[in-house]
Image (tube, rainbow, N blue to C red; front, side, top):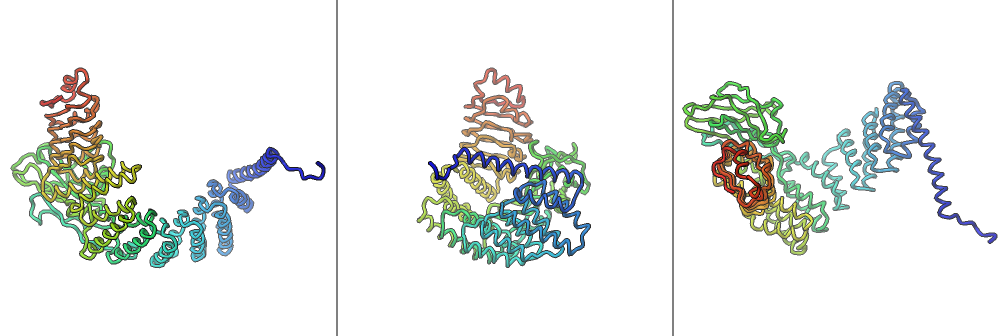
Length: 585
């Protein structure tokens, strides 16, 4: 055995590694404790700067030490002249580069670099852009670097066109660069903004001059049509190159998306019988902040605004009750104005003699809520896009991104005209991507509800009927404020959600043959008279408690629900719902 090299056992190697780690840990802990002690004593000297540098070089994600380091640098600024401060901060930037080599996605390092660059007396923004270029060349999805780049671009006033060309280069080298597609979506509206026309306003039976027009609809993040058409060609090249890569498909979906609406009052409704005012907004708001003012016949009213359900602090629909006798006399005419002072907008509504109710609103069709108005040129291009994606789908029949994009193109072009094809494609989607079938069911439900709202408004009726459509969820309920009769029968609904309370004019609910277990949204509906819930899953009397808040409820059909098997159910319901005269069990 003599003359042979002794090979260390695994146990010996592990023991030596353990001792080495313990040695490093003792040094690290000693330096850390020294830093904490100095900070506690308010010491901001060069030694403290060196100690924090030693620790952060090994562990750049120690947030407390970055905070201490900033305190030290802030102190040094007060005792150094500008040239000395410049040298200190340049050295800090070099140190930060070494930290980023340890962890290129260190939150603390990138945040500290942004802080240093902002305080540098003479910053070199070109250098910072080059650093971003290098980091993104190594990892084009480093979102810390992307955030920092946006800060550098803003501080140095880099032209938007130059940044857009930067995304061109990155996308050209890698179509799968999701971050570049996203950055592009923030730049295009700045370089090529669109400017749509304001929508008209409609009032219930009023002449045009009696209803004040709302503020123009502002389409935030909208791109002008000419550039939009060019983007379609770019993104099409990407997904034809790799149909299974999701980055380009997401960007394409953004291009087809609807613009955000301006914050505005979309509807004002007044009921003489309830002496109640309901106001619908274009987005959920908090009207209890004092920003809503009601003026009746020229006189400001002291009213208490409340959301339609206690679950909501922010809601698209708010209601208030007027003092008794204020508008109850049917022989009198009243003019009402709701001012939203926070957004400097208002909505007028006239309640004429002999009328029990009135409203002024913008319809979904007027506002193009569910699709964007297309010019002839854009319609032609989108038709061509649809044809191209259909061709791709023939080559890739099981590609979920392709199927979903076909649906979105059809909705952009003609949601009602393509309804049958849309339903068929959703069915295929659920089969090829079964893990997300619930998502597709909800999305399909959303689109079917949008179509039904459009049909209802074209017919100018207040009946919303969407039975036997396999609905799994309810949405856009703020658009149904004026509906008096709703039919949701033979779907797959499990609940009537709190948003259902937005249907303040509702008189009849038909929701037979669903799987409804929860009625929390049937809450304080002042006009509700009939509710039919045959063949659902209402199992306890507590599930029916929300109905007790509806003062006019006269008829209730619970046949085929488990609750009907409860002992003494009839007497219990009579006590819970004394206003119900026609109870079917």
